[in-house]
Length: 276
Image (tube, rainbow, N blue to C red; front, side):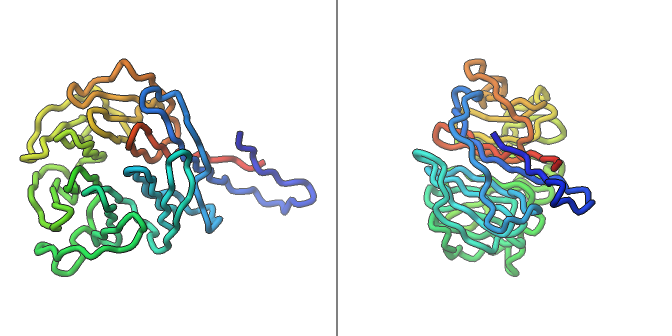
């Protein structure tokens, strides 16, 4: 489907060409992970081969992507289509939806609230963040209802996304690598090869399993979790932490980012093309 670029003899400079990144955004049926509904090249207005997708969020009828310096908003119904682009988000890796009306990003250590038009919305002052840099070492974030769940250093923190007040905390999360809050009253994390289910209220462990060691990407919504492990895209049931055998396993090869909302799983896959 995607043809490699080539260099003709007349254009050759004698230099060995560098590999080119070819990122693709996939929209996949949640009930059959082999069924690719649509795939499009990840937008890149700068045409800079070094720019990659650093953040992905599916929330309500939109997909949000950070690629290079740009934050993109895409329509998902009936097809993926770019609606708006806003610059100024380079190196932003954490993005989440909460309260049903806003998305949140952590940029330069600061929590930023945006409406669906990608306009900044003022947040109430955080009493624990007097200098506006509380989240400099945050590494994971997701949203559920009116709450954000953030792993910062050793702590898993529950923030009220409306009041910007911390409402819960648990420790021991230095080694956490993946996080999702699918809205089923639990938060799921990977730590040291174990998939851990935490209650939202209060933040305490409910169950765990080591069956999915090797998972590299995690997302969820409602009762379902989606993971990429050993090149496979797999649906798990949150209440059992085991595979949902009613859902076909799909391909997860080259997946770097994943999000889920309203019947579809969205993947960013990064293919390296060797130029001839």
